[in-house]
Image 1: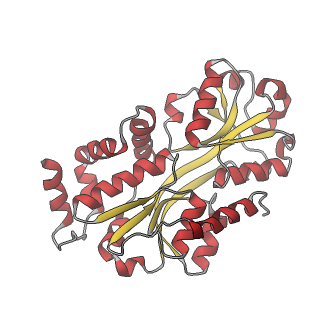
Image 2 (image 1 turned 90 degrees about the horizontal axis):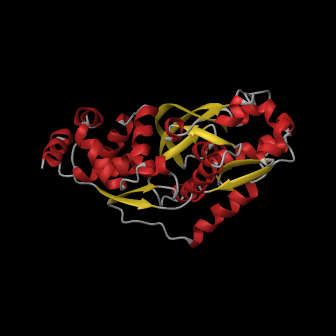
Amino acid sequence: MKFKLLSCVFALMVCVSTVSVSVASDDVSFGMPPGWPGATIKTTVVKEILESIGYKVKLVKVSAPIIYESMRVKDTDVFLGAWTPQQNPMLVPAVEAGKIVKVQTHLADAGIGICVSEDAWQAGVKSVGDIKDHADEFGKSIYNIEPGTGMHTSLTTLLKNNVGGLGDWKHVGLTTPMMLAAIESRMAGKEWTVFGCWTPHWMETRMKIHALESIPGAEVMISASTINTITRAGFAKDHPEVQKFLENFVIKASIQSDWINEFGYKKKPAKVAARDWIAANLDMVAKWLEGVKTADGKDAAEVLRVHFAQ
């Protein structure tokens, strides 16, 4: 497949050489793209767990393409936001080159798609093939998240291939918060809106939106997805106890949607939302810590319970 934005992604990757993301060797560094509420709150949950059992965690707040490149050169250790198949153009070559290791599919019931507002749905827009017949109502624009992401690349490919007759439509790529604000504003004004959507996210419960049926060629944008934990090469040897935890860390989309709702929608600080959830779900977290030792060799699950009982 050819991707229109590949050169832009490459340029962003090259820029990592001028961005210092190195951390001390005894720290565990997690890539966390700014503006990704799901990755932010999930990484914060993991950070709070690891720090409660004695490990030092650093957050590397750069875009996904730069995270991949910094992992290639061992400047970033872990990324919890590796969506597939959307990020395969970045992930697969790095795995095949032995630079990145796929540790665990920690969320297997994710998905991306194209959604429309309630008014459009009620008027009969039920599939991607229906969009083109309502160019005026939609302003001939499809909203989506920013360039460099798998979703932006996927929708760009769909438009380039003129799937559903949408080849001349405008692709409005914004940061996630800006995109959500834009579509909420349009829907509040009763304007028809079509946009890239995904689960897990609070949008599926907080907004009156509907996912469109696919048509041939639209599967590049409408697909079941997984979210994976990936590490730089050599991480398991350098941090064996954290590696065990990452192998055990598995959640459902509904859990991440709850996290995003607390953090992204209710605007609770990420650390507060993370700690509140951990304290209320110690049995689940303890399962992630089975066989894991703290930084000073103690049983991690027992230390976690004591820490959150304080």
